[in-house]
Image 1 (tube, rainbow, N blue to C red):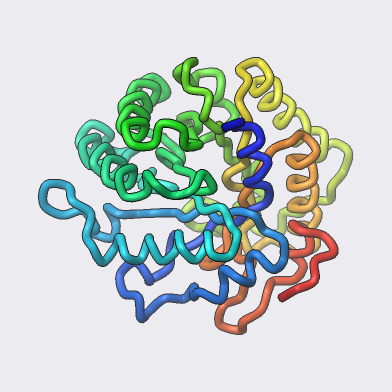
Image 2 (image 1 turned 135 degrees about the horizontal axis):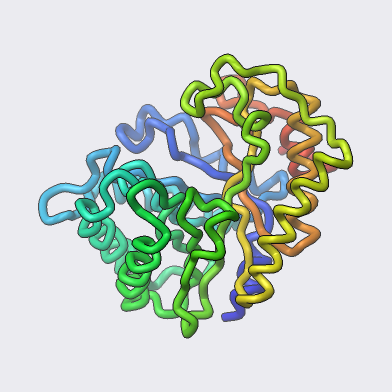
Length: 314
């Protein structure tokens, strides 16, 4: 498998299901089967399925994943594949792993041992992402050691599957130079997340300490564009030096920003990533930063058209 071609196939995507009640109760699901069809119909190529098995109490005795939770995951994977979308199984327990990486190491390994076995015969369009945004106590040095252990588990059952791995320090570009990957494994796609400038992308977000900071605009000035271009050039230089493809696994603007600024920013970031040759996934379909208004059954058209220009909505 040519991992660069695999990354090219990932193309344009969107994060899904991270905060959907479907994981607790299938009957309470916000996202439904028809939404996968809609995602594909407007031109997306991948869906990054954000999984929180610890939060969902899906890991029980002897670190076994519950059958009910796995059935929901199977549903999401099958819906993606059935609609010609590439599903990314993303282990999204970044908060828990950042607080206590040693205490949760065995659960992380058990998760990937089971997922690897369950999906070992699936097509190569299914991609694994070992851990979203390593941070906190999971330092770059510790993450470099842990990722080897996790990758070893995955490779026992999926020797050739594309695996996404990002740097510590929240998958930020500043952590790239401290990321150490096994040279012999060339089926790795490297991910970074991008939300700069945070005062713009996270304005009004309480969890980011910006609840009362609103009204920040992104005008798309030469200086604003150059700042993003410089950041992306650093990532691309790393990519070329290490011969690893790049997946921009998250970017977005919180809903409190004005729509004109959101559109300018999202369009610029998405087009720049594509020009460089990266795949990407917007954060996110539902919940916040939303791309699709589920209660009213409609796309947030300015956001959709910024991400995928000249789209005909299905």
